[in-house]
Amino acid sequence: MTLTSSIDSPVAAVITIDGPTASGKGTVAHRVAKALGWDVLDSGALYRLTALAAIKQGVAADDEPGVARVAETLDVRFDGPHVYLEGADVGHDIRREEVGNFASRVAAFPGVRQALLERQRAFRLPPGLVADGRDMGTVVFPDASLKVFLVADVVARAERRRKQLIEKGISANLDDLLRDMRERDARDTQRATAPLAPAADAHVLDSSNLTIAETVQAILDFWQQAQK
Image 1: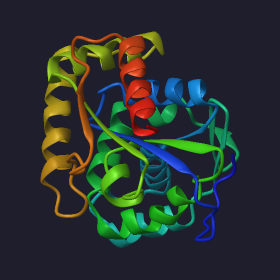
Image 2: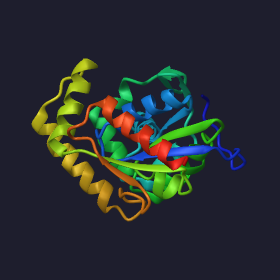
Image 3: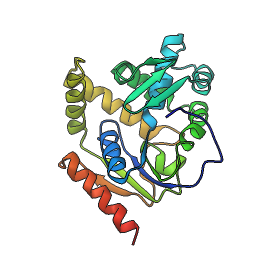
């Protein structure tokens, strides 16, 4: 899907899945969307793409106006599992820890969040959308039909991230991942703009001891209940 901004997108059902890094929300969101025949918005990819583009352009992580300009002019495209930045497939690059940490830092900037807001909302098209991120249910889609806040123990999350990175051929140290994850959690929950927190009407789901399939089924069950 090509990213465009629009304030006139038709209203469609939305399921939001928010949560901290490596809580499994991306994988779960894709499987829920597949089960329903809906589209997916990986909002974290937009912030990682902004981070990668800023790094490539030599823009510092503390340069809010500079990073906001990068976000406003992103040349990105989603095509199934592929993510393109300026025509190049960067699906592997945006998952690097360096990029993730940069993204976490600049995601606190109001200017960056505002620049990406309408781009995210433009994904809301029939038959429906599953959107995962950190403020999907609180800021981007506050009127979502179903809101889920996915949590998991930080050690379990770090182990999941390490496994993901190793499977992608990227070396990873568990202690380093734990430290980075705790720092990222602190930044995400304590930032002044759109802090990471469940919406008042969200279902909080702890996936620490659940398989992916069990987590997906729990969300599909929530959706069925919401239709009654």
